[in-house]
Image 1 (cartoon, rainbow, N blue to C red):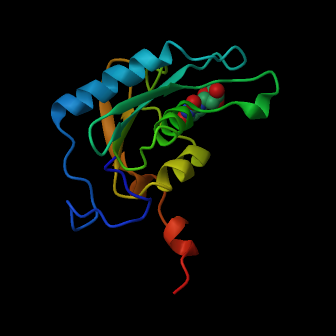
Image 2: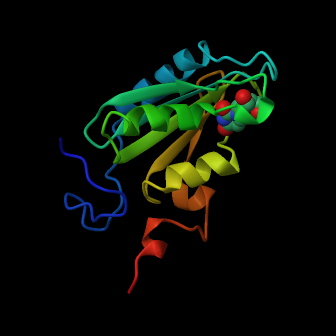
Length: 156
Ligand code: THU
């Protein structure tokens, strides 16, 4: 498997930033997160969310929010997708897309999800979508500036 540990240099891109995600991959992410939203288990909030993450080598994992009668145990769509990917051995990511039903808003990951995504680098992209399929894109660095990550635990 061509995966690397978080925070390790990305040798096919010396700056450490992701090369551009191809337009067809963006469309795949947008489509997949919208499909994943249909599996949302959200009987308490009635706020379905879908997410899709693109691994470094082109695989896509989807996720939805999964709520619980014990409310704080709800898991966001973004974390479902990341945990599915990591649990299958993927820790290097190029991009994620997120979808909700809110017509007027580009849905953005909550603070907890931003921290979970940031664990796997700051230089990858999050596509915030609307139900009409339009999107804006932000890097993790933009979503979570001045953040704490695995590098901060390294001893000098
Ligand atoms: N939620 C997500 O899945 N992702 C987000 O980015 C924001 C919020 C979920 C959590 C909860 O199930 C519902 O949306 C309402 O907060």
